[in-house]
Length: 385
Image (cartoon, rainbow, N blue to C red; front, side, top):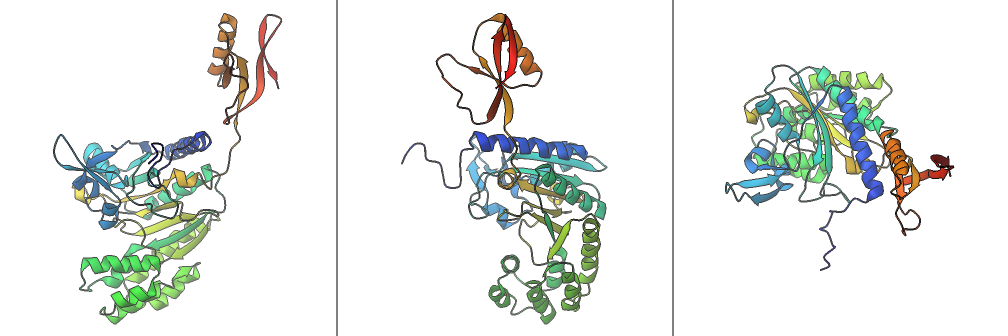
């Protein structure tokens, strides 16, 4: 095997894409900061029991494990950062009021989570802790929208769902947890055959309601259809009303809002309204988020929480391109005046690329040299090319 080969779904990031990813990272963090979110940096690996507590089987299967040579315990390489931020909020910050936290870092997956996806996503996310009202949900989605707008992503669409609908439909059903997970998977995949087989022994109202969810996706009319299709489970009706009010807030701002009431993709810590953001050209949702009030319970502090996350490596594929940075071409030399001029230009924010002796023309692809530093009558001057 060639020494330069990398594992499947792992890749180097070359200059052009690396520049764009870094620009997006800075823009996302600045957008979160403008909302008052504070940056945290969780570690790449933790003890496995802390990293996976309360997240369910899906995240466990995505997590690389290894032995700690110091403690002898099993470590995990993080596959998601939400649990880590919940631990920070619960144990390290331990604030009484609202805490707004954001993060950005690499996570590792044992398997790609979608076709042609990387197993090394660069995850950005934001979480708001300590507020149970719908205002926190609205802020989380508003920030997610503004983050994509900062990347100049156009024609955004929001799809809404709520995990409480399925919970109410399954309430009181005596079934093995493993079967319930398979029900969730069948709903997410809209696999009617599998769902029918799995729910064969369910009470009629539960079975019919779950099967109806497979068809309940589309525009605002879906909620009216859901009220009729799920009428046998009255506990669902307040949830549908909540979704209607939540959607109306963003529809009034001109945001395209849809619904997919069977969407259960993601990890098991979601507890309420969920959202996914889509854009033309993206093979899957660019952003997933929602409410997960129980995420900190396993750390001894069950605080309300809402937030979202995205993969910047996925985002870069649909983000609007930006022009190359303008630069100044300059000769290499030990001349004191030349060095002083170059230093001053760089302090002013200019990019100055020096031509090394014998190197010929520039081969950098990430800069556009539209000016040149030349010596005119014992002075170094910047002239247009």
